[in-house]
Length: 243
Ligand code: URA
Image 1 (cartoon, rainbow, N blue to C red):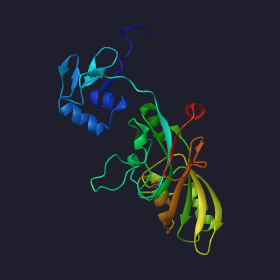
Image 2: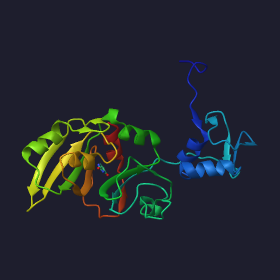
Image 3: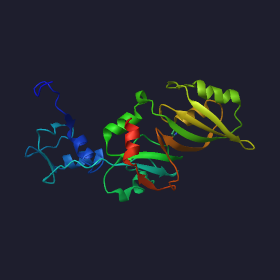
């Protein structure tokens, strides 16, 4: 393709600003509204304006935008932390746990407030989109404590697919780990990531999830990382993800 017919890399101003590692999309919008951003020398107050980073000159607080290095990290999210940037009710968020990273990152997918475990965070939006897109079939493994003794037939239902309000679940890998007096501990690997999916699948069997920990996403396991701590992915891990 020659230069004329090649598609220009157009992005909205909001996206360009948040991608530069400066802050969240909500913050980016507020900066644009506040008149802190210029495109080709003119203040714009429209965060949805399309810009072409190969041609347009974007400045924030009169400084040119500089693309940041890509950062990929793995956080061991504890329960009780939201996977959002800010909570109107002031509850703790995962951003408090990664405040020392020094650049703005977005979570790769979400974990419920009461789910703990492996949460990837990055400023590489394309990576995040690929990992969370169900078409990518990236496996995610969870350890589950269910509130009743589930039979082998129940576990087989989880494997085969459960009819949920938003459609049947894909085939899953399920392994019973142990039964305690009245609980079932099992491991489940899903290749999709719907809202509260594991909880809803277990609820469909008439039980409740008492504990849910994500231990693996794609090729990356939680390993020995202490709860509440983060570490950067190694270049080899990022490469393994990208295939
Ligand atoms: N499934 C759930 O039900 N909750 C999570 O946080 C992740 C997967």
